[in-house]
Length: 152
Image (cartoon, rainbow, N blue to C red; front, side, top):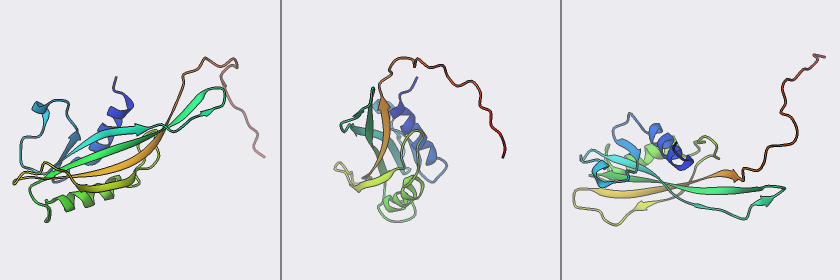
């Protein structure tokens, strides 16, 4: 079973399917990287910060996740350039609410080192927050079986 970071990468890359560029979660091995010069984007979970949690009988913490979009294109400008892809990513991703998370917020955008003469490489980073909690034990109270109400 995929963990929540893998699920988040897949959910976000699925949002960017069917456009003029290819998009998929960042592969684990070099053989799975895109080989063409068609513009493409890799989505990857970057890291998490865990501020001190609340302890109200069980530990609950925020998982402040950073999600990266690595953008590869032959040009910076034009209809298939970096900035065109950036605009689409902002339109589709900014404010999107992944399952179990808060809405995505933009943190940074800029070039990465390692550009080759035939390829530009940029990176957009977004933040979102999810919550994690200890499993705990089963509650002592029975689960609610049905609800009845009167119409007044």
